[in-house]
Image (cartoon, rainbow, N blue to C red; front, side, top):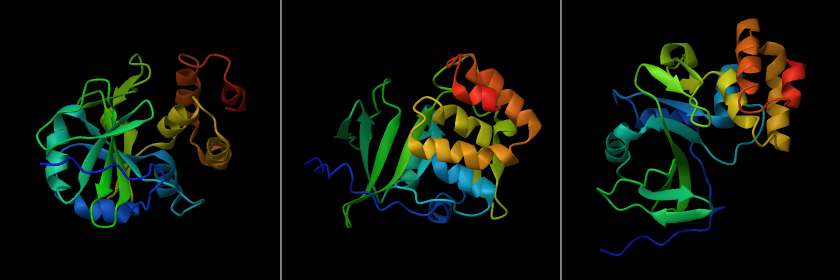
Length: 201
């Protein structure tokens, strides 16, 4: 069987989170929307354009999500490389992103992120000292879409602090609950001591 060709890396026409939720309805494994869309689900409205849609799953659960999204082609993504991930093949242990391609439209639809942790515990993959019960890290929209809480999203965004990340931080900060501010401030000090967001919190 011939491996599917890799489209241009910018060939994104991402689903709306509601479409992902529809396709994953009924799956009984932990997952949640992350990235900029998670912040907008928390805000209750879209604050900016999003070039992709990201959600996370546990590595052991990856086969179940691939089966549920079986109409898509899957590509292992890392270090700037995007390679086909054939059916039944597990991604290497150093791969944490799976891009999901609509083979008819030849457009990327969603970015499936592989996270550490367990069904009970959320673990920050960039510093595994940061652990918190998953039930305290995931919230749901009124329609039942799970998303990672804003403090954790901002923790991820702090590493690169791109223009869109700075906008997301500035937009979220006034609404961030005091407890989440304190948690984010403490967590930032571990992988990013001296980060400018620490003073703002």
